[in-house]
Image 1 (tube, rainbow, N blue to C red):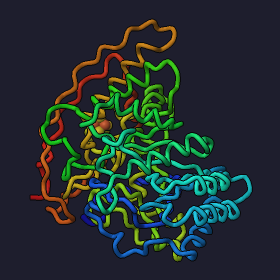
Image 2 (image 1 turned 90 degrees about the horizontal axis):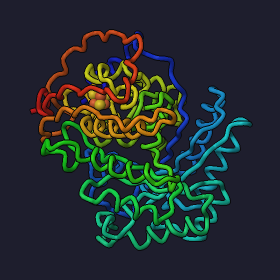
Image 3 (image 1 turned 60 degrees about the vertical axis):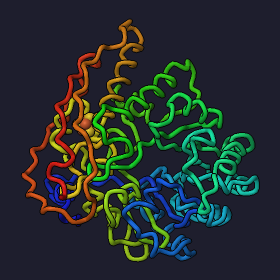
Amino acid sequence: MSREADPSHRIAADPSHRPTAVPFRQFIVKTHGRCNLACTYCYLYEGPDSGWRTRPAGASADVLDRTAARIAEHARAHALGALALVLHGGEPLLAGAGTLARFTARVRERVPAGCAVHAVVQTNGTLLTEDRLRVLADAGVRVGVSLDGGTAAHNRRRVDHAGRPSWPAASRGALLAAERFPDAYAGVLTVVDPALDPVETYESLLALRPPALDLLLPHGNWTAPPPGLTGGTGARYGDWLCAVFDRWWAAGRRETRVRLFESAVALLLGRPAAGEALGLAPFDAVVVETDGSIEQVDSLKSAYPGAAATGLDVFRHSFDEALRHPGVAARQSGADALAAQCRACPLLRVCGGGHYAHRYRAGHGFRNPSVYCADLQRFIRHAAGRLAGHLPGTGAPPATLPPVSPLPPVSPVPAGPSGPPVPPVPPIQRVPSAPSVPPLSSVPPLSPLPSPREGSAP
Ligand code: SF4
């Protein structure tokens, strides 16, 4: 689907629905566009978008220099007090720890005084050695490690190009960071696999002593459903998250930070929360590819080829120009860019429609509830119940929540950019204020979603 055909983008292009742009505060820089692993489920290299094949493997000195200048320009224009610099790939350490350190230093030199640059490299961990960790730590670059769990069995799908397991090197790298460079250890990022035991997976990850844990739902959408979301048998991913949430909640002390859980609790309490998994906060991340192209985040590439493209690059365009791109604006439009069912949903302010990439349906763009709607309902209601039972002074028992309406079965349909013409989008009535989160004990069930096949590409 072209971006012109995407209803979300049409909403964003309508000035009556354009909020004031929120500046980018997360700059995801692809320092290397290839990976030394070949994980069997990787949406980047195994997914529908093969744009990486035509890009240079490593970002050149020119691209990095220009990117640093553009970041500084944006920080200056918006008087940013802080920004996040995420060194990404592929496998960013293929660019060399020295390159990452020098690029980070260049960004810090160029941003205005008073703008803090929080740098982190997101790595598969296999190339972490003591020397490289020291270079990164000395440069003020923290290290996040991507793993599927804390055992060899959990990581059986994370293999190199010869099919050899990555676990021995990756676990060695994570433990080296935990033991020798704890201040530079940002934590672990894990994609949920509902086939694994949730508590056992969580506890195995704790053994790697991550100061923070990111639990991500695998990318999928109504046209290409996530693994295991084909039987219409309830909320498998939601159940998995609930089990880990209970283990985390009942620990009695903070064993690690779990961003998804902290976001859910904050949002349930009416507080803001960062991240793109939950909530209605405007999305403020942008990507620079190895050739200098400015793109939206990689997760969109799981929807269709070119979904993340903007047509802009750091040599000719500023990040302010990227803010005006309809796709970026759609992600900053809050409830206005959501499906009617989400805008009427009692969980709206907490859920926010879920991750943007998970709303996609071929022929209908991104203006749909999340393909994980039932899972999100399950998890949010569960967290609300736990919270209601623990609010100080209430003495209230955990809330009894009404049952969640079951979703119809999900089955894949052919994906691709082509599909039936998108019907005109009627003007959206502005919601004066999004529905507030109802009392935790009285969240009503939602009506079922339509079948994923309805209106999809044949
Ligand atoms: S729970 Fe479902 S309907 Fe409600 S906001 Fe989330 S995705 Fe939309």
